[in-house]
Image (cartoon, rainbow, N blue to C red; front, side, top):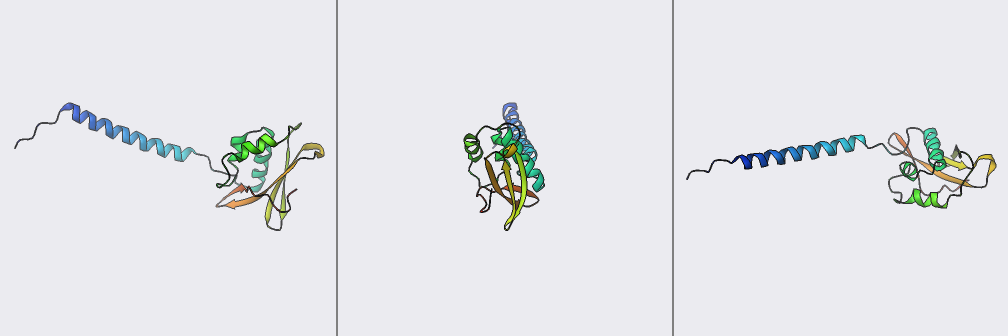
Length: 136
């Protein structure tokens, strides 16, 4: 039996599929390589980024500082309930019996206060969503 010769259409289709698969693999590799790491490299940087994201009311930036098992809408819900403040929020790092705690307060001695337990993960630091026992 003789085989029918390959048609240019079949060859072009195979090439197109190979190019599409290669482009998809490259796209996925670039996406993985460009996704910023969660958290911050130091506890002080985590405190600074936390205060900044709260001051700017940036839910996406705040969510990126949280542990992986945080609810997807945690930052949005937190910012929705946060009263408006005048000026930048102040963040300090305190040492508690269970590790570092980040405490964010309103400037000039306001009444609002938020606290998070610092969770070390690999070489990064994240905000835990369970409030520390001795928070504010």
